[in-house]
Length: 382
Ligand code: ADP
Ligand code: MG
Image (cartoon, rainbow, N blue to C red; front, side, top):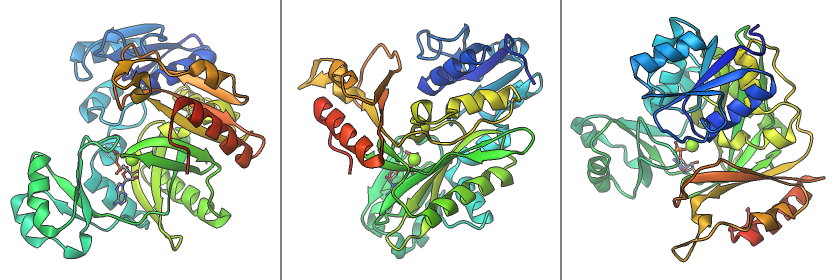
């Protein structure tokens, strides 16, 4: 194991990196963040920052020289950077696992190779693909194969004739055309897998997206035990088959008949796992730090039913005027755990923080979340 007092590193300075730093520090490690920005959320709490681009050879050499092990906090870390770091220190996730999650085409093939179902889709990578579009996929959604997040890089398409223009609008980059499905519920599972191959999963989370962005997470998910078990098993299989080391999130769609489809995976802690900070004995960030330091994985038991609400930058504006949300009123509601990421500038759609609401039962947590939503002017959770 790597002993407390030694250095752990993280590529990326966003809120996930910030929460990783806090978890690693509470175990006694020193943490170094590499990020190009001067004032990132993670750098504000890290013991040291290397301000450099993610592909900068000097920056990477410095990070690898200082740290015993390095992890990542965003999906699109260049695989070459992970390979470069791996020459000098332990790196998780590995470059090939990150590369699989970074390309929707590889990701879907991989899920299918694991024996799991995915949304019906077709690859649109070159102009010739436009001549053989399957009509059954419409109405659908065209997604760029790489670099999409929070619903970005996606266009809805109603009919076959609309696909060429949609592809044009995505810069004719490699894409997947997916059928738009009548989703009953979205759920996700976070798997944590150590270097020794042991793995644990957190309880299944139920996610409500608005405009392609996560708005709320409810845990435990309101699905039957058999479906929850299938989702946890599917996520474990994926981590196993990737020989994944680190924290991995798998997002699923549940169809009205109970069919479970893999949507996508994220090779890092996930927004739908933020509730674990307040509601579980070990958070997803604690697990990330434990894995990096080669400590045993923690218990994933959930200690209280929870609802997590994302606080987007929109809440900082009132008819175009800057006005911070009423966090004092939120804090006054019993069971609320507000988390702000220290971002200096609010912008619509920007993830500024989240609130986890704990209840004595899920019904109680949902009722308290209703109060929080009302105070903030958020649409209530479904
Ligand atoms: P991102 O990488 O931006 O998270 P996703 O593929 O997860 O991209 O899409 C974001 C959200 O859009 C999903 O969580 C879901 O709510 C909705 N969505 C995406 N694909 C489909 C689909 N094929 N059918 C119905 N809803 C979809
Ligand atoms: Mg998603």
